[in-house]
Length: 305
Ligand code: ASP
Image 1 (tube, protein in one colour):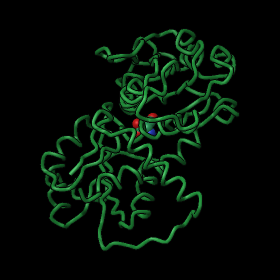
Image 2 (image 1 turned 180 degrees about the horizontal axis):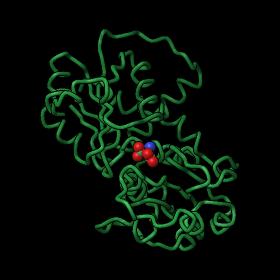
Image 3 (image 1 turned 180 degrees about the vertical axis):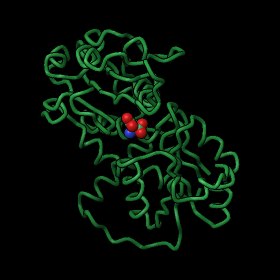
Image 4 (image 1 turned 120 degrees about the horizontal axis):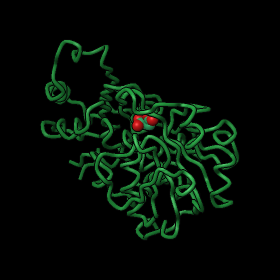
């Protein structure tokens, strides 16, 4: 029974191919006939989400499962039930898989220790967001013409991830998948938003020009104010000036550089309107690809082995 807890334990090449099969299926027929199963997949969301939750809900529907969405406010969690007991309860009711988003790093790993069904990590604290990283990888794989995914197909490409690296699970999971595919990854944040411990295989800088110069791909990250201790960002104006992805900054990148963002975007803060909505932006393509990738991951986790 495969859990999907971190980017490290995902068979990325296989999942890219599965996602591509879903894209083609849905391109041919956006509402394919589905044989519904009398079975539930639980989406346990302890933190807000729009894209990830909607994509997992759609993935459930595409695979014939009914998504059972449980949010903190509307569950026994507010009565003090532990995560493990919630998982045991859902297992006892026969749910086929549990997708978990949680503010604490390591929560899905804890759930996997007691679960009889696959646990899928939909983002845990500042730790990991494996399916986001996979959809980012898939987006680049399509953009670069679907090279053999078992090779170092991003070799020679420079990728800059700019923003709140310290609190970003997206940056951590992306670093794993992108470097495995051969990319040179630069992480850029102001000194107060850099990670406590060094992240392996990454170039770390607080100089956005150094990160963006000659990049093939630039990903902007949201300031995760919900995870920020007060005082980490003394001035929003200075942040905009030094780190915002705007037209002058993007001119440092390669002429065919593309722009990504995991969303939600904060327009005018980490990214300027003209870049978010510009011709180089893959932001909405990422969102769309999120559906194919979640369908692929759920299919992989639920497949009879
Ligand atoms: N949606 C992403 C996440 O859940 C990025 C963000 O929230 O800024 O980590």
